[in-house]
Image 1 (spheres, rainbow, N blue to C red):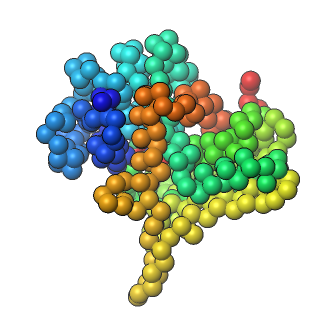
Image 2 (cartoon, rainbow, N blue to C red; image 1 turned 60 degrees about the vertical axis):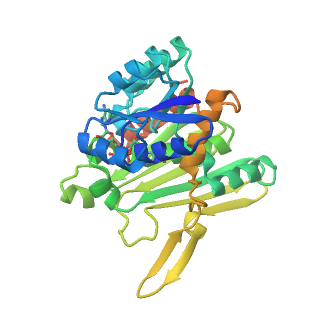
Length: 340
Ligand SMILES: NC(=O)c1ccc[n+]([C@@H]2O[C@H](COP(=O)([O-])OP(=O)(O)OC[C@H]3O[C@@H](n4cnc5c(N)ncnc54)[C@H](O)[C@@H]3O)[C@@H](O)[C@H]2O)c1
């Protein structure tokens, strides 16, 4: 059994813990969180006396003889646990964005390569059924070469104001663009980005004391002069059916394809209309959502049963482009060329 520890016992950490508990090749050995009440809550949820709790992830890594750790701490705190794990020869599944800082990312990659450990980045939409169906459609050749992509991933306003206590240290672009950019580059075969242009709007969240973008829009130009637009907003009404709204339009040489995640729902009508997110509903107690599939995939990578695709190198490149998007938006829409 592969011995797994988790750094960060928040929303994602709890999901990972429950999923590892269900993996047939892995055992959850320990979970760490600097905030004792969150750690206690996670241990209670898991309810497995074999799982140890730590408030210091270094102590967890030092004492638990782990084969892998999952890093699920806020966006801007991924660097230290990734480096520490790599230096202790522990394999890593790191949340997206790999980091919010290009230099940090490069240090993380260098540590991973120097210590020859596996490092996967949690681009979980690669395990999201409609996204996989789109990938299969593109691979079939029915779409032809991609001409243009219009991608949008928004969240309800509760995400920056309530769910993420640390949203001020990140941004809608850091939180959501990693998914869109990774999907687009997965679909277009990993074409390099030539330049980006981006703008952002601050109105609603600033009035609530959060000096962060409500919304960001970027145009990304690839090496073959095809373009993609990425739009993400953090201010959707809380009455929206799903916490997120992911839509994508891909125009190809031969056909056009659309994804609307709100179509993956059961719709109910009472005194209000509600979409229940039916994709990923547990069956026989088994967690079968995209994040759960991704977690099992990580264990299968450790076993050597599948090839690692969501690599640290892709994580670094993803951060480089999103950093350039932020630079462009901060400069009011300056075109930023991406160095080779
Ligand atoms: N892949 C996806 O689709 C997806 C979805 C949501 C969130 N995320 C990412 O997952 C990460 C975690 O997000 P979340 O929603 O679980 O946040 P969260 O705030 O619920 O949890 C983060 C936890 O990390 C803990 N923490 C902070 N520093 C720590 C440290 N040094 N050691 C141990 N614990 C520490 C905090 O106390 C908190 O409990 C973020 O990077 C986020 O962007 C990814």
